[in-house]
Length: 103
Image (cartoon, rainbow, N blue to C red; front, side, top):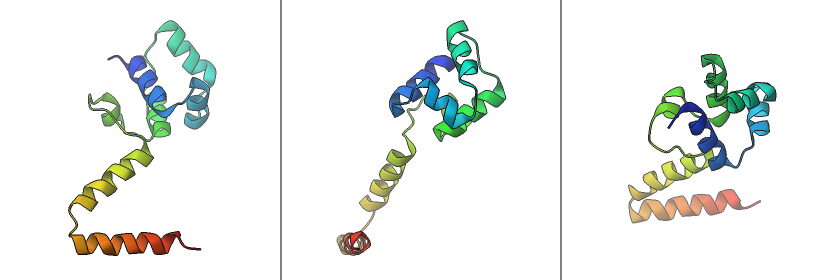
């Protein structure tokens, strides 16, 4: 997968447009549009801004493993920790969550 294809995939995963990416990354929309129209590689500083806006590192960008949006990453971490808890600990966590949800 090339760099632009990877950006497109990440945008699709998040439901973002190129316009939103430009806003979030602080990169002119014309810069991003030209990258895609001319099939050019972004500069390293531009790619760093894109990654920061997407909430991923450059290493994650270039890895072949799929990335999760930040909110889904938190859910995945929570489920991983949950699986390691004893039944008694799970009951305590549920009670805490119920308490946090009350006004």
